[in-house]
Length: 143
Image (cartoon, rainbow, N blue to C red):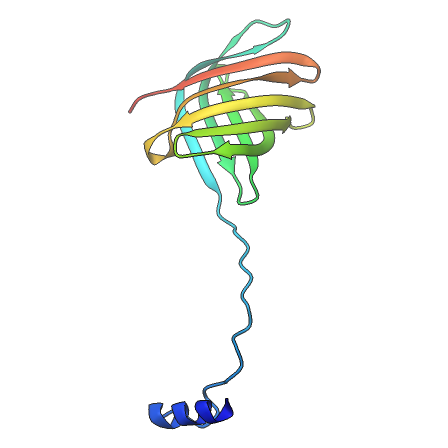
């Protein structure tokens, strides 16, 4: 094997020993990309025992390890954020299991449909937030 490296070095005009005969060290890649979906639109956020309130924006960020951050902006300007895990995703749909909301307990599921440029076309969610049932419906503006 050393002879092959020596011959290749001479043929290519490289300094002796420039070509190593040992295999390259394996490279471990850690995915770091975040996929981001967002859209202005209209919807409703309902929490048991309280009046429903409008939703004007939704975003979903999915990390390489399938951890999800989802946020909705309410009509009064407040932002509600949820954490969770991507259960299934395909070319048009994301299924998410919710696991928290800031300092509050949250559980439930979200199904979001998306289109071109990762715009959220529609989303529905339901579950519990600090022991109270909630739901979210959202339809993205067509632009």
